[in-house]
Length: 216
Ligand code: E4P
Image 1 (cartoon, rainbow, N blue to C red):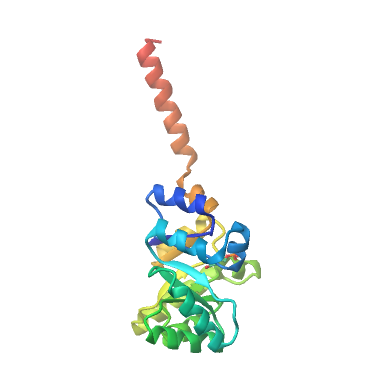
Image 2: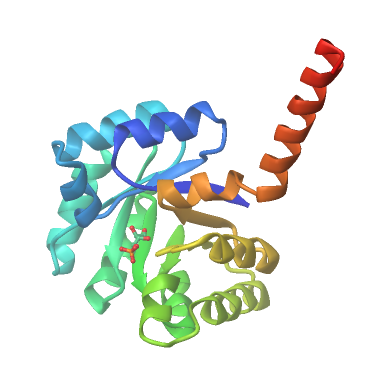
């Protein structure tokens, strides 16, 4: 399973890449606003650091404007993937962009039927938002499971990016279900390292080593 970072913060991305764990990055208008850096320059810099797919989102709502924005975003770097909202206009734009060889990530997906339509339109990636589904008492990971089954039933090549991830259990379940990608906030990536038994084990080994060396 590939791991993407869901952030536009350069310091977080650099750290994840130095660990050798980051295969790509997803951003959205909220994450760009949080980073507070200029949009296109930030996307360019992220592409140079990650050398993997980097999602940048359009903000128009009608398909002609989305296509125009997407073509501009795609010029920033070959690694750019254009994020398009799950709407009729959005999927019309996806169809046109995929015919031009521009990679797309259909975002704000909350049902398996939406994911089916996105794949039929030729989306490169689809992003079900599991955390936001859980927030309204829906079963986010259950919908991911349905999407994986549908894509495998029909041989769709669209890759599933599990998005809106809130905690390590979402990551574990994604891996068990065979999701292609999970995109995670930096704090969730940090949490994946930790286990109390690892920390206790390191302390015990070092304490015993010290005793052995000092003869006490
Ligand atoms: C996905 O690509 C989105 O950027 C993101 O996962 C949304 O997550 P949120 O629900 O935490 O805002």
